[in-house]
Picture 1 (tube, one colour):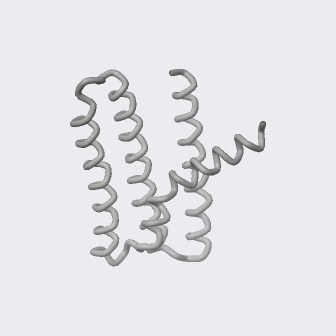
Picture 2: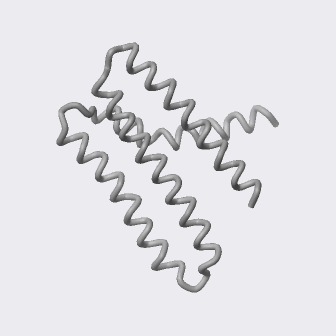
Length: 121
């Protein structure tokens, strides 16, 4: 369990570093709409990651009732994604491209973690 917590912390650290790099790039290029969208997407992506981690931890302990529990949280996580995409369509100050990049930011962080782990070995 301790290794799992360290790995989760490492992924959050990579997510924050990736977010700072992308936001500084957006602000340097004066893409304020895309930066706003990226902030929204990154927050939703981080919330999605923590909800997934919480679901995985609960499933370990709820062996007989895990199916209904996991379905509820699965629906909630994708409802968050839908909220972010719909908000970027509806609001003129939130860019869709930045939102999608923000939603994928945790996946990029996981990829970087795996890549850096291979380089350390």
